[in-house]
Amino acid sequence: MECHGGLVSSLSWCLVIGGVAYLQHQRRRHTAYGRYATAQGGRGCPAPIAWFIQEVPSFVLPLLMLLTEGTHTGHHHGRTLLICTFMMHYFHRSFVFSVLSRGRPVPLSIVIWAAAFCSVNGVLQGHALLHCSRYDNSWLTTARMVTGVLVFLVGMSINIHSDHILRSLRKPGETVYRIPHGGLFELVSGANFLGEIVEWFGFSVAVWSFPALAFALFTACSIGPRAIHHHRDYQQRFADYPRSRKALIPFIL
Image (tube, rainbow, N blue to C red; front, side):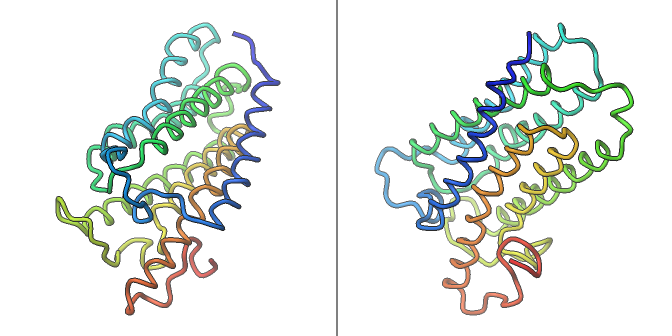
């Protein structure tokens, strides 16, 4: 399959513009799920099912593209490693994080929009890597590739460890909120969000393409404000909340 460069560029710009627009929206009001959700009646989707439905397209669609279209584009270890790196995050989100999730029900509208986004972004990143990127055999050993993958793995480790800390705050069936301690939560209130942002900026460095950078920017714009909202919520809920903690970036923000 040929590279649809115009479509890839347009979708990438949509990620950038959409991320900025969503950032402005979240500055005015919270996205209504999790602790900020209002009563949704029968329209709420249980958290484990919601996370699976909305995240799995970004694993399945690139996998199908790799198994089918990838066989016709030549054998390039760098490209395969990068698309598998992308899928690794969503495999964990779909088949591990979703099963372990103890969160509140998610409004069905949010699940649908998130699934649609993950479908489009999964196809975008997969197509850009398989058909639009050019990597020679030396790419695997370049400083850019090695650094980007290492940063991605560090970010994913932070994200997984932080999620584990948050889950450990509750017993099964509980919906109460407690102050998280341990790991990067000693420095920021949104350690899980910071980890995911680090992941995708590491990925963008390794891939070195506009679609990957656009996705990293969208991630920062969409979940960065949520870390700030959580920080303010913790401060309002708990009089003894650590004053030294920042919201998202240690010692800065």
